Image 1: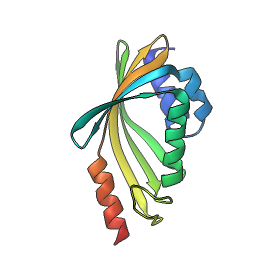
Image 2 (image 1 turned 120 degrees about the vertical axis):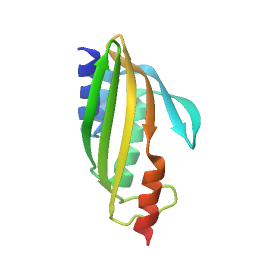
Image 3 (image 1 turned 135 degrees about the horizontal axis):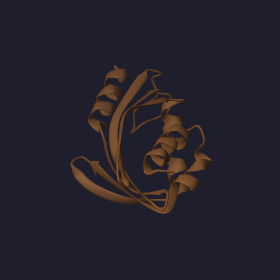
Image 4 (image 1 turned 90 degrees about the vertical axis):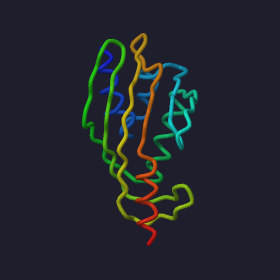
Length: 139
């Protein structure tokens, strides 16, 4: 598979929560995840199992969310994806009690594929936008 096909399949199967076990075939044993949290750059190492647990936590918080790829661009071993995730606040999130109201996440990432597996990614999520929605939903 091409890097574009690998990342698209990753989104359709793993990131969506539809087939978490597929993480083992699409992700390297150790994946560097570069994140921006409160303007701080943080790198964590994720395993396929780790990532599947991360998606399970999203499902616990936002139910069976929908995930729509809004843009996908590939060049060489890197693939850029921008997406929109819409769910319902059904579990506690950062101290916010469930409201059963919608929460939308807008995010993007660049994935680097090596040996037909995701080896590294750089992600940016509108965390403030999510927090504002959670605050508003509590009112």
